Image 1 (cartoon, rainbow over the protein chains, first blue to last red):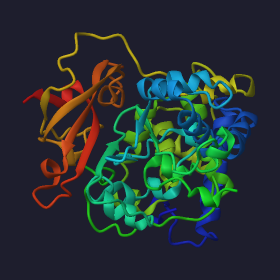
Image 2 (tube, rainbow over the protein chains, first blue to last red):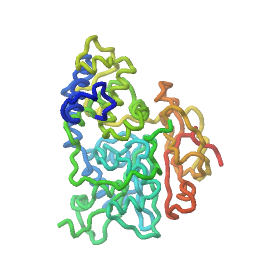
Image 3 (tube, helix red, strand yellow):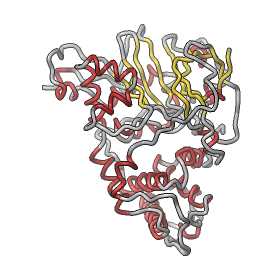
Image 4 (cartoon, each protein chain N blue to C red):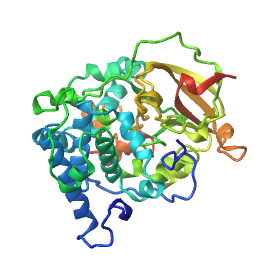
Amino acid sequence: MVAHDHGDEHHQHGSELSETQLRVRALETVLSEKGYIDPTALDAIVDYYETKVGPRNGAKVVARAWRDPAFKETLLADATKAVGTLGHVSRVGGHLVAVENTPKRHNMVVCTLCSCYPWEILGLPPVWYKSAPYRSRAVKDPRGVLADFGVTLPTEIEIRVWDSTAETRFLVLPMRPEGTDGWSEQKLAELVTRDSMIGTGLPKNPSEVR
Amino acid sequence: MDSVHDMGGMDGFGKIEVEKNEPVFHAAWEGHVLAIQLAMLYARAWRVDHLRFAQEQLPPLTYLSASYYQRWLLGTEKNIIERGLATAEELKAGHATTPGKMLRRKLTVSVLQDALTRPSYFRQQQAPALFKPGDRVRTRNIHPKAHTRLPRYARGKLGVVERCQGCHVYPDSVAVDQGDNPQWLYTVVFTGNELWGPDADPTLQVSIEAFEPYLELA
C-alpha cells in the first residue's frame, strides 16, 4: 500500500503485502459483522473467476464463428444474442459487441479511463491491460503497442481502436489462419489466444497446434 | 474530472510489460477485494460508477503508485465510509461496533449465477435519439468536476456517428447520486489526424462510446 494511505507510515509493520492483506481482512470482517456480505459467497466468486471463466470461453465463440457463417453473422450483428445461443459457454449480460478483423482492418480494444473488459467471455483482464502504458498508448500509437507484443502489421492495414468508455464490451474476432480447412471447432479454438481477442495479438500459427 | 485516470494519449509510461502465465490473482487478498466489491454492488450499496468515481478521486500519486486491486480497495473503503455503511475507525480496528444498515439484498451462494451475470444498462428513452449513423458530430469541450466518460483526448473533436447503441444509464448522473437519467449512446469514430494532429498514423481510427450530452451536430 502506498505510504500516505496510512497514518502510521513511520512505523514498520512488515511487508507492504501483509499490510494490504491485513487491511482487506479487516474490511471483510467488518462488512461480514455488519451483515452486508457472506464470506462463503466471496469464496465462490473467487473460485468462479479463477477456474470457471477465462479466454477459453471467448475462444469457443471465435472458433464457432470461423466454422459457422450463420453464427458469425449473428455474432457481428448482436454478439450478446449469439453468445447466448451457446448456453454452455458463458452467461453474458447485455452490450457485447464483436468486431471483425479483415485483410484491410485490424481492431484493438482498450479502456483508457479504467479497465472495462468483457469479463464474461475472456475472464478478468491481465495486468498489462489495466496498466498505464497500455491505456495511454493504445489510442495514439497502436502500432507501437503491437510492437511491444511482437506483432507487426502491413502499413496499409487500417487500425481501429475501440475505447470502451461505456458499458458496451468488445470482442475482436480475429482472422482465421490459413491452412485450417476442415479443422474441428475444438482444434480451431486452440489457435485463439486471449490477446488475439483483444487485438494485441494474432491467432497461433496452425503448426503450433498438433 | 480531469485526473490521471484519464490516460489516453499521455506519453512517458513506458513499454507494456506482459507477464507470461499470469495468474488470475497475484495474492489471495486481490480475489477478496474483487469479491467484496461484487457483493456490495449486488447488495446495491453503491453502483459501478461510484467505484470508478471513488478511484478517480484518489490523489494522483496514490492512483499511479497503487496496484489495480489496491485502488479497488481504496475506492471500496471510500464508498463504505462516505455512505455511512461503516466508520473509518471500524475499518481500522477490523471490527464492527454498531449494527449494519439495511441493504436491498445480499449475495449468497444460492444467487451466485444471477450475481455473476452483468446487469443490463439499457433504459427506456426519455426522448428520441438526436443523431443517427453517418452524422458528423463534434464532442463538446467540457471539463466536468465530477465523473464523466468523455475522455480528454476526444473533447472538442470532429467525428462520425457509426452506431447507435441504444439508450443507457448515464454514468455522469449515477456517480453523483442523481439517478439513471438515461441517455442515447453512440459509437463515434475519429481519425488519428483529428485526435493527434498531422503526424498521427494515417491509418488510425479511434472510436469512443459517447453519450448524447457529450455531442453536438457538426
